[in-house]
Image (cartoon, rainbow, N blue to C red):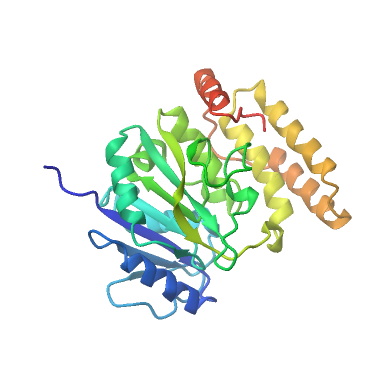
Length: 294
């Protein structure tokens, strides 16, 4: 019999939620099955007190979400390959059940093509899952599990072979859309992504626009995402669709100014290496319900 899959967990923190972080760490420690090794990355901030056995890395500056998570990956060896699977969890989240790690092991063992699992995020008070936390266009029923084309950054499990094969999260994105960049590269390499409604991370309901940099980085990274990953004919289509959607949503004037500032940055600043996906990947994304133009 093969040995159970080794699971690690990467948690980045700004050090400002010590109680929530401790509760999350307790929920990870309470998972059924073999012990999960945990690395907490202080992203430009000291790491609060953590239980014995939890490793910590303190960065002198905030590298952003993808940069901080990439440091956590490398704490598990090159591309994280000292373990088989890495959990990425928000520091103010909480694993709602004690069988999540075992369900991950079972899912990855049963499906060799499965590269990424994205969990359902639910408000701890109401149990409600926000529509934006269901990573597909048909998001009305968050209790339905399915194949999807992207994943949620702070509530997921990634097979480390995926990272070794396609590379880490894009550091320069700093915040927003780094998950989709990795998802598209993984799908282009033949991996699949599952949304699992039975794997739950409790997380308070929030609005992404609470971040001061939200509108600028969302716009910039949309353009970078397209420039890095899409076949040339689809780049203007994808960017154009998101431009129209932004205008239809009628953001405030300051938000719109920030958005267009980021949009301009997306075209004028380097976006990293360009590796356009194959057209058969475009078709795969389309069959999965989300063609890469929206």
